[in-house]
Length: 516
Ligand code: B12
Ligand code: SF4
Image 1 (cartoon, protein in one colour):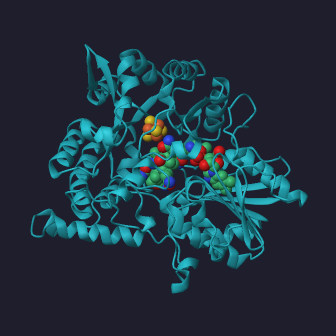
Image 2: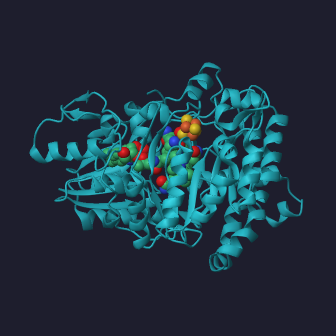
Image 3: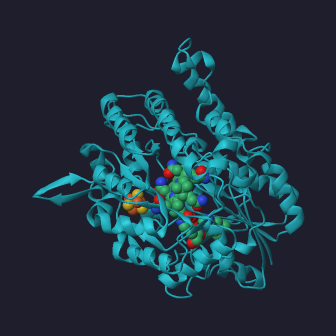
């Protein structure tokens, strides 16, 4: 069969596509796990944000797919509906499969007959997709394929879930990067790729989708497979690698082994990016950080979440951000930042502000922490993604102020606190964050001089969009610049000039389903 796999073009504030365009790890993994005789093309539409329609049309012409698969996060749902509608218009008989976090956790949002989705793959997709394609090819029934919902005439059939993969040798085959049909991946001018070393997490942070997606578990790929995968990415041109594990820091001894294996394989000239919890890094201190640096780690995305204890309790993120010492539990964020800085690494500070009981003061305390200690702010607002415990709590307390799903990108405040409105929450973050980003630019200049010299003006224009010389010199309020920024952001969200099939008539008004 001819298969086209697409990821959506929608990006969010902290990942401006001028500087960061990463491949979607799921698609290459799906391609790598299909039977070898299929022709597969993978296209990450983030690479062609300004020409999505033209690119989809060209891909449909070139690949002539029998089946198109789309990977979708919740905030990308409306874009995905438009892409599907365009594909159906170009090729009415093509089979459409959706997968990823949104179809997995809000499948009922994908069953409207006007949408044209044939199959919803829920949860891990590698083996499910392979079996699905086999069943379609053989012309048999789809009723035996675990992990899917599918359209059968006028009915939607819901098959049982598939068990989680254990990632032992060969169970999940390596990604097929050769299937990528578009180029232009970048991390500040260096070609970037993604690699997985493990899947899953045993924590249960209230804002995270992972538990509803796959339960609380942690499975590891063999380290030899990880090194082969890095080598494959490197050989294809990657000079920066983002580890897309859910939580690599759950098993620190193994993380150290990976660092050592990278050094032994002489793959440590690559820049590595990783996400992690603060507590294990604080506990393993200089030994772990020193090894990470020698292996090439450069940026660590820390899930600090919040620096105030009450907020950490709400987010259920206290255990991963604190440890017991001298009979007391203390927050490990600052200690971890200091360790990473001591070893020459940069900290991307993940914080969540605008929680239900947040006040102006509590948000200001977190913003001040970010201003003083983190290198690149990754500050978000609590976002009610489908099926998370946080979503249930916000619903119960009546705090969800915005149901426009395309704005669920993490930096648009869509929930209010008991005391503050969405606008005020988002304005506080926006106002503080822009200057933190500017402050990091000299450090980026040192490592990526050519890229920064060529693109600094565009990066600054992106960071300060909405501002004018009048707002810069104080002749206009910052709120006016913020309002302009929000208006620009709204127009940016229309990635292709094609109607949303669920918005074409009032009777088709979208049913934005938020339950799993
Ligand atoms: C790594 C990561 C990132 C990296 C992305 C790097 C990259 N290019 O891929 C960074 C840090 C940049 C990032 C950014 C964001 N992320 Co993120 N990210 C993750 C993380 C940790 C792992 C995702 C991953 O790649 N896993 C490995 C792959 C192989 O697994 P997978 O994606 O699940 O795919 C499998 C299945 O889902 C399925 N599948 C997926 N697509 C398809 C398609 C088809 C056709 C089929 C059949 C199957 C299928 O099969 C795959 C293989 O088994 C997850 C989960 C977590 N623990 O936090 C969040 C997560 C996916 N991110 C999320 C979000 C929301 C974002 C942001 C909007 C920021 C934010 N608000 O948190 C941005 C948006 C990015 C953008 N486009 O601009 C949410 C999505 C929630 C939702 N309901 O949509 C998650 C779940 C975190 C959370 N908040 O719970 N993210
Ligand atoms: S530690 Fe990370 S991956 Fe695990 S539940 Fe919390 S946010 Fe999700």
